[in-house]
Image (cartoon, rainbow, N blue to C red; front, side, top):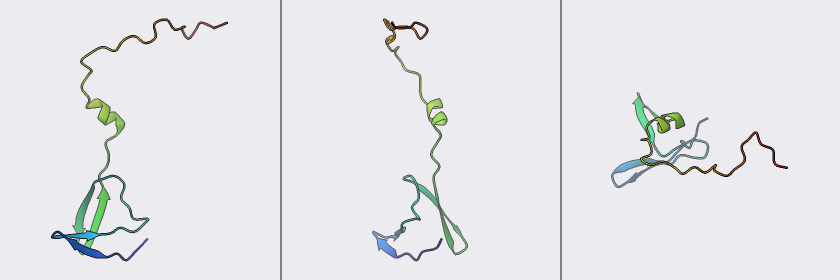
Length: 77
């Protein structure tokens, strides 16, 4: 896929407007130069497992919410 884009200058930086189909997912990207080419790649989001592994344990205990409920092996008539 190829498209022609406009280059603009805003507040001293150069801006490239990406046409539909060239959007980069997320809110951050890494840009690098390879000769005359610019390569833009999305920053990979951490996996849910990595996010959860980085969380601190809760400093309090949650109340027991199952009290008074039927167990899964009891049948309601």
